[in-house]
Image (cartoon, rainbow, N blue to C red; front, top):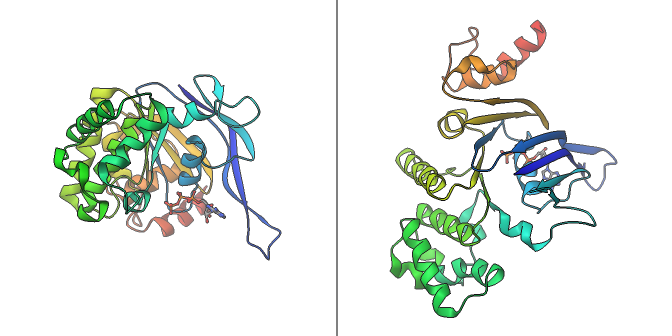
Length: 274
Ligand SMILES: Nc1ncnc2c1ncn2[C@@H]1O[C@H](COP(=O)(O)OP(=O)(O)OP(=O)(O)O)[C@@H](O)[C@H]1O
């Protein structure tokens, strides 16, 4: 189980500015083992910063992240074991792969880091992971540049799974892909989750994807977690006005007023009427 307790993060507003920019306002959330979550919100709402804190890559300036009760930051932090437990697949999978490292070596890196395995055992596990992620075995000796964008994403997933994580966070998992490939990648991720039962967290600005993939939806707006609800197909569970705007804007619910196609305008209208 992953718990965020009063977790927050601010950045400096720039070298010439004394002002602080709040990326994530203090929030507390629990993610249960094997659950499917989506964190949804528009660009700049703090989703990536939150994901990076959960993965131990960004230090919070308030609160902490706990994995099975052990803190990720601070004096008593879990250390290396945390990086095994929580894996983040970032938006640009291609950039995350070393262009000079073969696919096989890239997938074997976490095996080397977290497990004591012989070279043969690593190779065997790597081939299993390639197969699990629908990649041919002979991709082992290819370079990232020889793969398509979708294949590179699958390599990033295989590499993350090599650590046998308890939680996998996808930051904009399907950004930049055409619709059929987006659907396919999503189906593959959901299949993997069903087989391996890790906690799955999608970070996305796409409400449609969030609702298709998650059984619990967290909505962020301007650094604040405005709503967190279990979702089983009934839009009526969403109570927050901003969530309703996002739903209407993506054509997922009944329009809430005549401006439903223009979320910006819609927000201003709602704020005025609040
Ligand atoms: N390293 C950084 N230094 C300064 N400001 C940052 C840094 N990282 C993020 N921010 C700021 O924090 C805020 C939240 O950014 P974040 O990337 O977490 O949002 P997001 O919801 O993931 O957006 P997107 O979907 O566009 O990636 C933004 O205003 C951003 O400019």
